[in-house]
Image 1 (tube, rainbow, N blue to C red):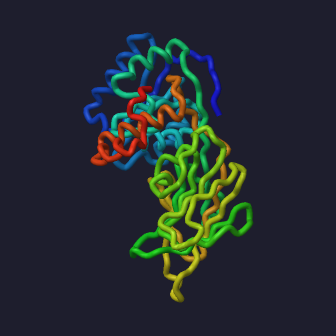
Image 2: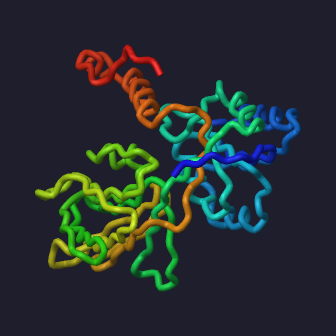
Image 3: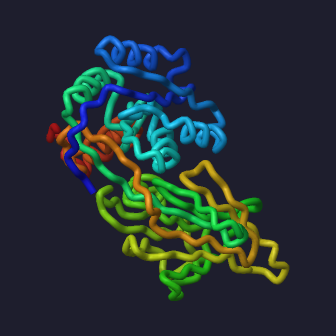
Length: 315
């Protein structure tokens, strides 16, 4: 979902990954620039262990007084911020301080021009779908959100797990695999893509079910509507029933599973609000990011010879 909005931004909150801006040089430069333009700015530093739920509750209780949250780091930092700040409803924009970023629209060299655009009401708001997962062992009904994906994967010994998947209460398949990925359109360029899943326009309204190294005839990704509800049960493979698995939410929150446990996944009621400044289409951004990734990798020459990307095209 994408919409034009009209709200000049002058109040900012910065979240900085301490490993991407260790001396806070970029953070302080951005803050000084905003204040010099007549705006206000506060910031929070994300530590190695991320930010805890306690810190996030403190953010919510204090009602962050900001029109926009600027996230300095990589896609991982932006994913965590977008997911955990969804209930606050403040839009975010990411500054890529890492290598390859699909979500982070800005680079260090473009961040000040971007702030000028925000001050001048030159932006659009893009809403990204979130998914919510709930654990069968949790009687409180608590759900955990994910912007990219919820992954059920093996843990402990290097052995496959049996996962029974149902959609809207109807049996789909039993996967003997390393795990399974339930992905949003935003997450389709992440782990799901690495596991052979399709790349989906992030504005699409759907979910992807992608098995990880399956020993199954049903080895391809399956696309379901956003109104689907997915249940994944850890089934036994051996008589001992000692298999174990983990559920990860965007790769940094984990739930332990034993045989018979299940996870229930559906579309979350909230969405992540991402600011968009450039007029590039999803396909233009995808080509640009892929060319950068390939050029930085050892397979650049071979990929160029195969003409897998039109390297003569310039966005």
